[in-house]
Length: 59
Image 1 (tube, rainbow, N blue to C red):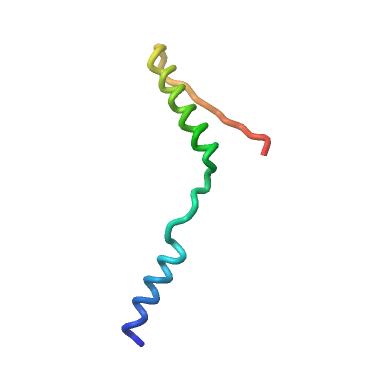
Image 2: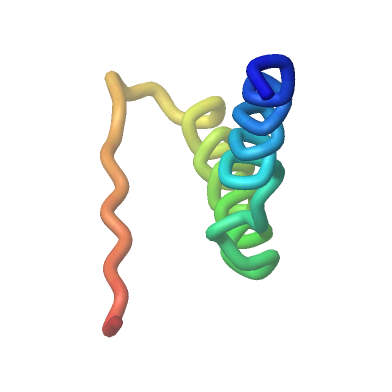
């Protein structure tokens, strides 16, 4: 029984902490990537010290 315990612990860890579904939708990730690309382009075209971005949602 003692030899089986480490195996059970390992299997439990893999079950509870294994691969999970992303908490973000594909649309969210696409929008995030597009926004990052556009902001990178803007930062290369203009001369300023920095900028901030705030995103809001009705939800």
